[in-house]
Image 1: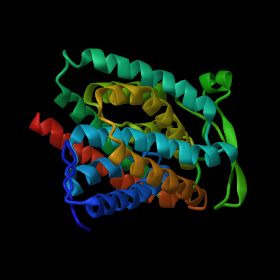
Image 2: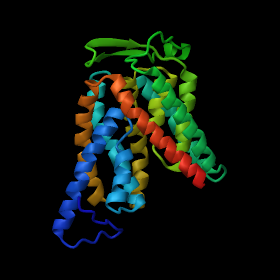
Image 3: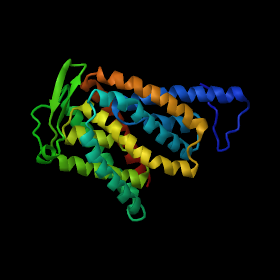
Length: 294
């Protein structure tokens, strides 16, 4: 792969260099879409480091493209997940309240709280969640989950057809206050530190609310699209969304997310969990490192 720095003014030696770079970004974006759709993390976890490390893209433009990738991931996978009733729309919209309020809180707390403390706190929380997922082992779907009174009142329970298992899976939703609190915290750290919170969304639903992992990842994809769409305008006004980068990212991620949504439905939950746990540990490690540096 030829690494061509995309500096602020994007100077190229010729049209061939530009075309080659755009194609490379496009294929990386397809991979990001597949990963984001399957794990419910959005495409930013692949797009941002790839753009900055491989192509020398300015971090602000990389984040802008990452926002676009999250919207594209959500759009590409939402149709399939909602059509097949894997996404729990009630849970998604309910938890989105916590995330939004948390993001606003985080924006205000930025001048008061040292980010390094939040980095450490949430790193520990992620590591605990990774441990909880490991303990689940080969569990395909949660069993013996009680229906929380708030979940009963709001009708948060649901069912979906699992193509890998070949059966309809009905599920309850437990520990709504704990899940809501984690989502609020995810919103705070997103607003304060400017990072995505897909791993926290999946964690809140899978570990605390004890929803099936497939439902958690599908609902996380839906929620991240709503959150990213709300903030995309700000990045656009700042000039951080450059079409040279964002166009191939959006198209590639959209294709990858469409493929990923079909792939996820035919994967077993234990397989998705095995893919998700290393990601959580990686993110936790990055947070501990940032907290140590701070």
